[in-house]
Length: 395
Image (spheres, rainbow, N blue to C red):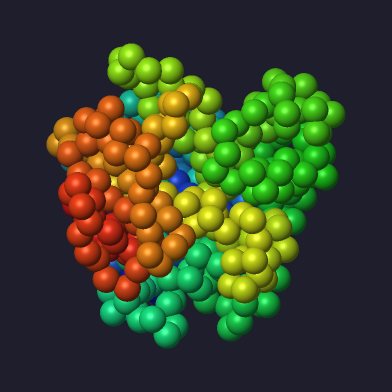
């Protein structure tokens, strides 16, 4: 198992809160991480709520959960039994009165909106949340590897994406086959199991259209016309893909700068390997030859940076007069980082980037590109590769 950066954070949260919600798309490694935590404790109880046998054990959930006092109970795919959340509140409070204050429940889920809504309504003040993304560069690539001009493993991560079985496949063809099967499984089994009655062919077309338009401004009416559905239906479908942590809506920066700002969000398919699988791109040569290459790289870098600083307020900046920044990050300490992302190994920035940095009050300016080593440019711009930029952001 590749060590996950989230392991120590999960351990810390379980030491502080009665319940922790671990979120992430399917196959991102949530169960593996949870079982690793169970091994550390030695007496944890794991239930996969997709299995009928596990659900039968919870026919009387209050009695069952109270029977396992002083144990960490891990409930996988907990959104399958939404009625559990009200019961968990009472069980947590009873276990607290018995002297057990933290580390009671670890709740795993792959539908963030549903799970967070249920948890916030029933477990307010008793639960912390942690998102587990697919593998990030900081987890599978060393600084020396990122600077290796001959192999460039960061390109491999970009092409294959971070889902563990896609990344660890023995070659690019096997990785692509896994990602294609992953997409089919989501469309044919996982999404219908959540309840929405959405034709798999329609949702796949939308997902593929979003991959073609990676990083573009959301135009619901255009998507609706192409799919022959209403704008509200497109919005609902995109909400679902965001809820499943497969798609990201990056909001436009807003503020009083006296300029006409773009207000529509940008939309990204979050995992670059899924982008390439939806477009049938099997290897680095195919990706680089496709028009999506620059936008796919941009989305890949954004995911690296947001995983490194999950609590940052993220947006992009664009005006009608050409001032633009790919990513604006407002950190908890008040700093504002403005980021330009380029696929070129000899990157430059436009005048519009400088205008954007001034408008948002940037305290640090980054240019992220596939360079071997970091170096400074004029006007305080720092050039870094994605790994170095993520490490600079990480606490």
